[in-house]
Amino acid sequence: MNRWKKKKTETSKPFKRPTLAEDGFGGRAGYFFVRALTNIRQNIFVNVVTIGTITLALLIVSLFLLVFVNLENAAENWSERVQVTVYFDRDLTSEEQTMLRGRIRALPETSRVSYVSREEALKRFKSRLRGQETLLEGVRPEVLPTSFEISLKRANRDTQGVENFVVSLKRIPGITEVQYGEEWVKRFNSFLNFMRLLGALLGAFLVLAVVFIVSNTIKLTIYARRDELEVMSLVGATSFFIKAPFLLEGLIQGLVGAIIAITLLFGLYEGFLHNAGSFLTFNPVSSGLGFLPYEYVGGIILAGAILGFIGSLTSLKRFVDA
Image (cartoon, rainbow, N blue to C red; front, side, top):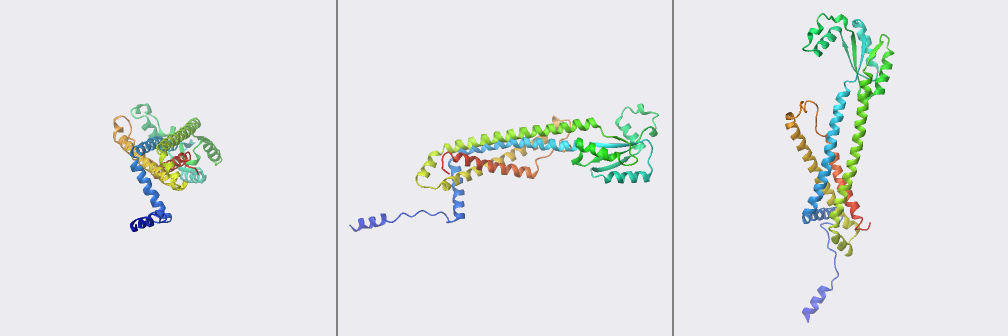
């Protein structure tokens, strides 16, 4: 009888909610993080599929971004060839050179000014006809003009910027004949604008495709665990308590997928550099080919984390009330 009373007394004690590691934000955050890692370990296959999808999607975007960045760098190098040349039919004295150089440099669009004498012009002409120097036999430097070659700042290398600069240049006394390859400049800038527009459209399409694919993949993984969500909801767990581990899980999946994507991209980049000599006629390193800048790498990793988080958030709305 006493034993029965003792058992009755023990079983009649009020139920006490099990506490987390520590009450408060730190304890809850730690619990949610541990829970997220536990979910990943318990559902290895599903998480591998999700991380693999995120990795492949971000790798495609990163590869496109790498190509686009290097094309922009190449276009920047080509744009340095946009020069304005001022020709003179006589040699300039030192005073005239100093005066004209100073006035040209005073123009805000000017980046660099160099004087080309008749002797230098003939030397360049011969270097361009290397192997056919006999064609220049008897040609004297006096038949060639002297000139100023002017390079423009990056912001003024478009068609309108060059035209405005030429107008300002012709206002300087002593300058009459100016050439800058008007048709070449227009075609070059039209090509650049077309490439940037095409890149923006392809980039936007890839981003939308990545968001759609990753979101649906995460939705399938959460759908496979819908019973767990329903049980937690039935026992009285709050919406935030249910969502938090899944949101952290999506965040971790996105981070891991982004890091793997960047690692694979760097491996492809290094492999391309070491084997490019067998199928390319130029050295990609000396031509300025480079990997993504650090800010782009950080942006891709951040985008992966956000992608995983938002994918989980939107997928949970179907199974958990806000």
